Image (cartoon, rainbow, N blue to C red; front, side, top):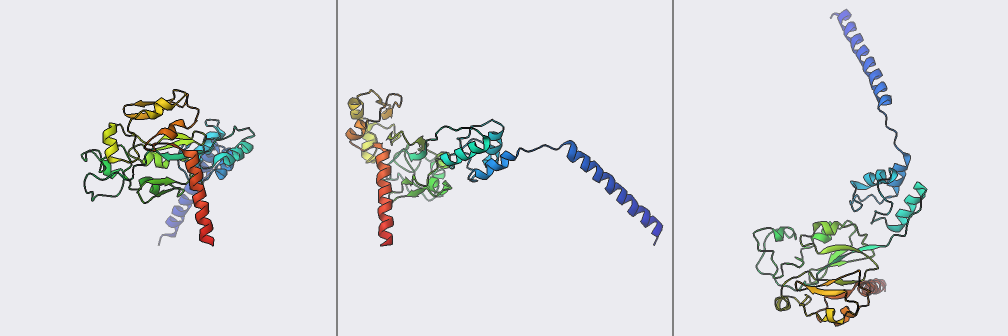
Length: 285
């Protein structure tokens, strides 16, 4: 073995390694970007679900946007008011009150029959693919009932009832919007807690058609329109539509709707909460 050649080779390798080390050290200093420690502090406060409801790529992206003043501190729906106030403390700023937001489903038509037998994937998006004539249900506007929104919810806030309709638990719902993204009929929406009166139907079929296939569909009778003292609701293209700039949430339209399409969600939420509390008490006795 040529020990001299081996020594030269090893020496050369050591020299090259030393040079590369110097270059890397110089480069790390030359191109070092100082990270504001507040980014890590804000990210630690965020819930870490990376739901994207804030409009940024995950919690880390939102944290960086807050620190660089590209985003407001109240965009995290899962974190809510407490999270916003904690972020404001880190940023040394004040934050306005954050009103809770909840998801709602603009359909109650779980009783609508199928038009044909469906043997495909039990996913709402699969059941409305082009070529199937608008989906498996007789109502081509309403909920498919396969629970895609319930499976997509990262907080377990949506369950399917015995009519295969989504039921939202407001105590778990954070208003993240995942259910909105996956609904192929655009039935799931996010709205603020203080807006309580809603039309839970999206059908534009004529009243006679809707009346035959759905117990809770708008039949365009215009009773709500005639009863409203603020001219805040009108039947447009066979569907009642609320103008929230005029609506005073008086609830008169709720009272006169013969199909129960217009609802006061505040009362509905209270009723569901009471039912959950009653069930919990009965389970412990």
